[in-house]
Image 1 (tube, chains in turn brown, cyan):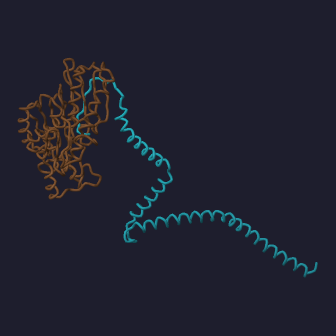
Image 2 (cartoon, rainbow over the protein chains, first blue to last red):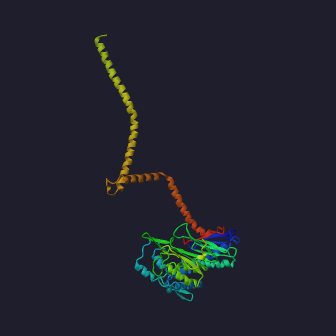
Length: 309
Length: 138
């Protein structure tokens, strides 16, 4: 590591998270506005939580076709591809189940009845997303949630802009769950501290991340408590129940891919994780780990090479 | 002097001695009483206050104790009196209230500041190469 390097850093609040951009000190400060503008644009037009965004319109007009832009169509096609890859274990129409479990609700959460879960699961099916030209329709009662990929998609677009600007050494920390690094020969890698989601002030390991993205998901901070038991926000679309796994981390070249894999594999068993990672690594440059409900950690075959401590 | 006069003087002397002594005794005792009187009033007031305090405690105990059971453990009474003492002491101390108000206003300020991060977070910091922490906390 070159300790003599200096950077300019700015933090702004977007996607319900603190987004930090750190660029070389010689960069003009006005560049931050341009960079954050890219994130703001994605947040405004594609985040399902943003009023008037394309995904918001699709959700509000469930059962009817909605005119959208090419980017939304492209995103949906990629998301459907990943849902197929995970055999439905990853599904952006999972929102009705998320709501059923008490997330995004003002009233106190309660344990859903089996019948309710069964009925709600019928609404969760990415195959019901219809694309006709520039129009999209989801079935009545369905709702798309973009939380699993929107922030990382925005970071990928941001990185494209940074490269265009000639920036070859930088780091973007999007809420701690998505960290993208840019590196050159002077500064060949950034060190990413992977916190242990079970213990505060404790790290699982330090990773050497070079021109790559580290995505992590955990349920310890986002959960509902029902009858003294905590239920995390990552719901298995197949079972209808929140996953009991503790933490996952994925290193990938592309943030969007890494975040989707991070969510898609969160519901897996350790053996399922190994099997899926072998399949995914044949198509994408990805490595990672999974901590299951018993706190056992499984690495993918090539993950250990990233651990420096 | 005639015998009669002597007898009258003797009797008069006796009367003087008797009344004189009584006056002396009254003076002594009345003085003590006189001194006691204001003390006793204060003590009585103090006693009344004590009695009133005890009555209040007892009433609170009676209200709080389930079934108004006279055989309820003394600990509960102590607890009640402790609670009432704490309540009184809290009520008589304005400072914590001020602090709580300050804390509340501070919290409000924090909440108000959050959007500022979005709008006016244009504070650029100069940083060296640092480790970044990854945690799915947001």
